[in-house]
Amino acid sequence: MKKRKIPMRKSVVSGEMKPKKELVRITRSKEGEVAIDPTGKMPGRGAYVSLEPKEVQEAWDKHILDRVLETTLTDTFYQELLDYVEHQKARNELFGNG
Image 1: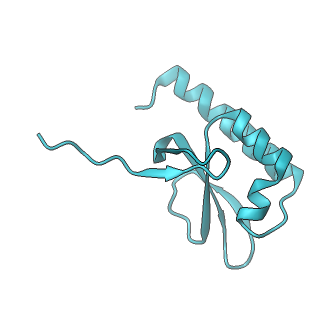
Image 2 (image 1 turned 30 degrees about the horizontal axis):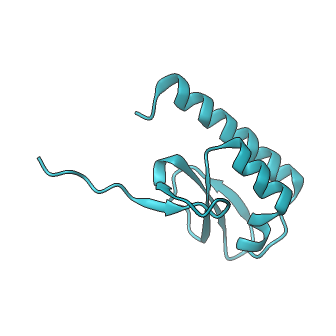
């Protein structure tokens, strides 16, 4: 059986290449709206962050996503992203990456 190719993406915080499933995509639309993209298919400029709360906290502290997406993000958005990542990490630990 042929081995499937695993899509890799680079985290904007650590610069590490990881499988797409281990990252979360944040998008900025043409209108300037920024959103968490769990499907990875929303239109717009995308940036990937690892599903590690420490990485999201570092992105928040250094405002890395602000620079990458060329916009100003609120603390509310970063908190929402941190909550999402913590939830996904706990879910993966419980149920595995299936």
